Image (cartoon, rainbow, N blue to C red; front, side):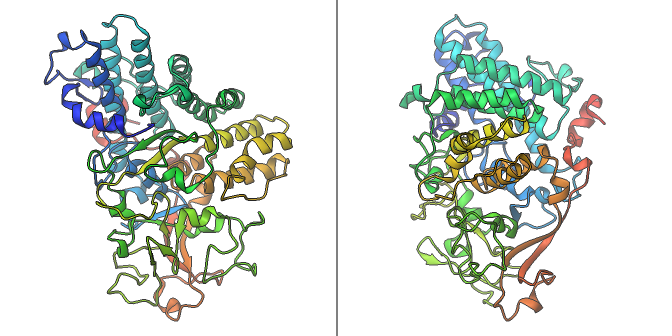
Amino acid sequence: MKCSKYLMLATLLASLSFSSCDLERLPLTDLSEENFWNDEKNAELALTALYRGKITNGLEYSVSDFWSYHGLLFMEHLTDNAFDRRGENNDFYKISSGQLLNTNSFIANYWSSAYSRIGKCNRFLEGMQKMPESDQNKRMIAEARFLRATQYHYLASYFKDVPLVTTVLSGEEANTVKRSTQSEILAWCATEFKEAAADLPRFKDLASSETGRACKQAALAFLGRTCMLQKDWASGAAAYKEIIDYGDNDIHTSYPELFWPGTGVGNKENIFYIAYLENYFGCGMPQQVLPAKDGGWSLSNPSAGLFESYEFVDGTPFSYDDPRYNPNNLGENRDPRLDYTLFYNGADFMGTTYRMSPDYEASAKERLDYSSEASKTGFMWRKYFDENPINDIQSYSAVTPIIRYAEVLLGYLECLIEGGEVIDKPILDATINKVRGRAGVEMPPITETDPSILRERLRNERRIELAYEGIRYWDLLRWEIADKVLVGEVWGAPYPSSTTYASSTKEIDPTGNCRWYVGRRDFRNPQDYKWPIPLSEQNINPNLRD
């Protein structure tokens, strides 16, 4: 969403809207449905509930929504980018480590939240049929169709074959609905995004009083993502190119500012995002993500795999054997986005030095081990924090992007590569090099045009540019490489100078670089490429059983 306004309104006015339980219709609680749709203002209030979905105000201990911080950012815990300090028995870890079952609570919450929003959208769209035609009502209908299609996009991405329901169902109908195939759902999504885009305003035409509402570019970006899942590269390229040609969006001059309160809103790069607001609809992420020295629980930890993916400043791949690697300052001579994204032992963060090593004392939660409430990799996230004092770490004005213009440019290039288009310097400069050339990043331009080599450079660029934005897992699944990169040991920060490393790590790093051992993943092929429909849903509806 463009700003927190719609989340705030949804919180304050949800009781004046309407409720639904997944796909089943329930009666209105505070307003008569017969009278509700007589007033356009009521429709505007109802629309706010569609934007909020089930996103939780404050601290989240579990997934509440595909767009909540726990559901979006913590999805990195399923990937080679991060590790969840709650350990290998945590339901996030089980999804991508060979332990995924249909009783997994997190996938059940994703399912429930998506169908809850879909059910509300269906009721909204049915109600809008009772309203007179107007430009405002036409726009609200487009917004509801867009929001509904985003949820089906996620369901088709992860669960694959699911019920495609576009009307309000009775309880009996909801309990007997049948599944549509992933290809059918994606084709439907593509049509919905196209038609919604036609009736949505452009990004540049959103008034300040309308912040938080969908725009044409957001719908086109989701269309691009949908086409990528379909491997319809020409249509995906066309969707992304339409955004580029509008010229409303651009790469922001500061990478860190995209994720900070205040500067994360109102710029041209963040097309669609969630912006929480302290004390109104706040984000509890700091409580879970900050290190102990700053009052946090160190729950979300970057991995060595992500750390190693950042190039040296001249654009060459990172290597522990390179003389430019400094184990005492891990960000030295590296892509600046490394230090913008994470921090490590000896780095300054929020005005003090972060200490985390196997050699440090346990009392201050500075010792890297397997029992304390501290990072399990030695790394922590800097992204999303402007390092100013936070009044309430359980109610923070976080900005979490859903669609950024950088992703649009990288998606467009990927569609061209996979579609067999000839890639030349002007295309590279207009896409990946525009992202790499951002002020404050200024990484050397990529000149490689061989598709097989360029593909890998692009994939790595997506990994580091979009790190901790909830996109890596989706990429690994659609590239069909999860069974390769999510199998094996998970490693943390290197500690070659540690005096206790050899006796304190569970496994010695076989490369000799003294990386801290974290755990192991065992992604199964093919079953882990598809989330099972929650058992609770299968028990209600036999048509959902495999």
